Length: 457
Image 1: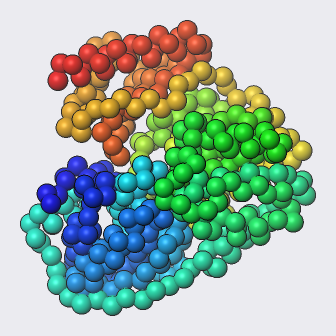
Image 2: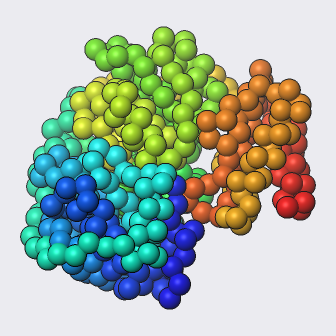
Image 3: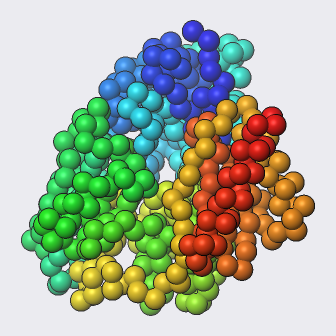
C-alpha cells in the first residue's frame, strides 16, 4: 500500500480507512511518532481514540508501533478529544496522540498529536512523520503499556467549573451519536436538579445514523431545531464527532453562528475580572470585531486551524477566544482547551443567571448578511495556486486585504474570504455585507474569479 502524502496535512493526519489508512499504516505512524518522541527524550505518551468503527483497530496497531520504538504507552481507551487533552495535565504527561477524524465522514479517520502537551503539532511536524516512514528512519526499543481511566476526574473538572444560577431552564443536547455520547449524560445529569434536560442521539454509533456530526453546518442541526421547538426548550446544544466543538440553536429554533456565540460570551466576561483581549479566526464576521471594539476588548483576526488557534490561545493567555467552526478556548476558569460540552454549558450558565432568553441576549449585534462557509472542491495539488492567483487579483484591484490565512478582503460594507482548506481538497469561502444585494455582488465576483482561475490551471 503506497503511503498517501496528502494525508499529512497542516495540523493533523487524515485519510480514508481501507484506502489511505490500514493496519500497516497505523503501525508505521506509531513507529514514526514513537521514534520522534524518543529523540525528544520522552519516555511515555498518552493514546486515546474516538468512537469510529476503525478506531480500535488503528489504536491496536499504532500502539504496537510506539512500543517497538521504545516508548511506554498510557492507553485511555475510548474518549472524547477534550478528555484526551485533559489527561495531559491530569497525568502530567506532556505528549500524546488522539485517533480521530473529528467531523469527517464515518469512513475517515486520522491522528492528532502533540509533543508538548500544550497544543497539537502543526506545519512541518506532520510532514516530518511522513519522511520518517518513507525513509524507514525509526528508533528501536521495547515499551510497556498501562491502562488509565480518567472518566470520573474529567467529569469533576468540567462540572466544578460551571456555576449555575437560580433560573431553571430546559436544555436539549445533541451528541449526534458521536463520542460525546459516552460521557454527556453523566455530565449534564450532575445538574439535573437545576436543568430540565432533553438528550438527543446520546447513544454512541459510529455509523452516525441520524445526522452528520458537524455542528458548524446548519443542515446537520435540523432535528435539534425541531426538538427545541417541540419541547419549548430555552437552548439547543450540539457537539461534533470527537467532542471538541459546539453548535448552538436559539430558543426560537434558529442556528447561531459561532461569532455571535463569542459576542454573548464576551458580553458576559466584560463585567468580570479578566484581561480584555481576544482573537478569532478569519472566517468570523466583521460584526464580531465591531462589537468587541464597542465593548473595549482588544481583538484581532488570526489564521484558521485548531492547532494554530490552540497554540495562540496558550501563548497569549487570552481569557476567551475561538473559531467560527466551534473550537473555542476558555482560560478564565478552565484549562484552555477546546471542549464542546463545556462550551455548551457556558451558555447554559449565562441563561440560568439572567431572565433574558437567547434571542434577547443577541439583541444589538451589528447586522451583516452572510453566507455559510462555501466549499469548492479543488485538487490538493492546485488549491494553494488558486489562492496565489486570488491574491494577485485583489492586489490589482487595490482592495484592502489580509493574508494571514488565504485572502480576506475588507470592504467598508462587507468582506470576502478565500482560503485553502487544510483538512480536505477544497477552497473554502465566506462572504458578508450590509445588504443582500451587496452580498450577492461580492459573492459573484469571487466565485466567478475562482472558476476562471481553476479553468486556467
